[in-house]
Length: 93
Image 1: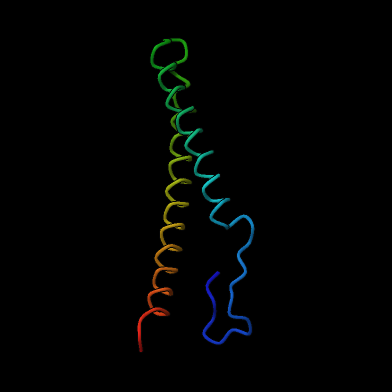
Image 2 (image 1 turned 135 degrees about the horizontal axis):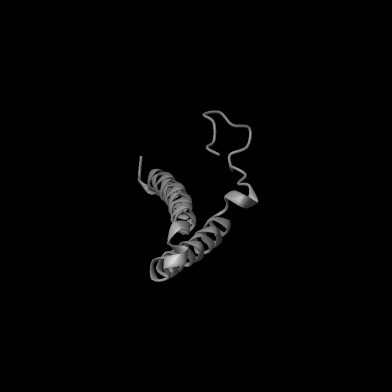
């Protein structure tokens, strides 16, 4: 949530699920899912009877990569926004 131009309250209230801690924990979870999918692809490639089910770990890998990319973009934007605010507040007029 970005603040409006003339807000009543100056501080933006961040939801618990959009906090930095929650985003980092979700990134760790998505990385674990990604590694699990890589293991699944290795198993499916090694065992011929599972080769026709390779789409499941590929789908898991793609979805976890998209989710992690989305979270990283969100965190980078938030970091840049806060750095911009700090730079404006610290610089002399």
